[in-house]
Length: 126
Length: 207
Image (tube, rainbow over all chains, first blue to last red):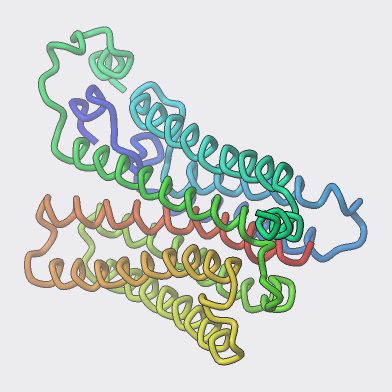
């Protein structure tokens, strides 16, 4: 990798430091397999306190996404990756807003909605 | 690392404003990275819809009735394996090794097709028992989310064929290896989306 590329930052997926190794993919594969099997196991076991299982699954999924980002997409916190990290942070922010915002709003609406049969009665009276 | 390289990496040597435009590979990679993030935002919207609608089964089959965990584990394994072989293929492209590019990318393609055929068989089974997208809001959201992911995989496979043809006809020109590089990013990003799908849709169904 030439120095003028390093001076301009690097694109995601280009790892200038461990450039050209299969090792990072294999390490990533190892972590991903363990995390995947753990989440399949966690969803079917009785050993874990059951209300805690969704949180555990969420943690395992986020950990695996992190593994994929680091070992497959080669995102790191190196100074030449600042642009990629900033874009990723904004993406995660928008994803969080969309998913959790929708869920909170819809749960609220469901909670405040009049039951359907009473709504029908009201319309009949009119 | 020499002293000038050290200085360039730490950014002391030339001020950012005087460094001139970044190389095409960096610009293309960054632009594609932004596209991938916006694609992931599309998936986030579909995930939000699924999370809101997953209980609205309208008296039809529920998620727990429909989804088979073993099937999903095999699908996950296929996609993960294809992600790793795609990584090996990208390394082969970087080192300009034609035969091992063909080898790893062919394996990537085979895993991708296996994943897709498993998904199609699941969908056709669901349609045959009357659990199609028009049955309930839950199933509409399910088919939209998982179908969009499947569509991305299909497009990725078409892209892979085009890239292999370009390697065969054009060789490893800078633009070809740049496109291959973007394909690798796309394929890895699809695997990241699949983590969300199998956790929320398939494992979430059995809680």
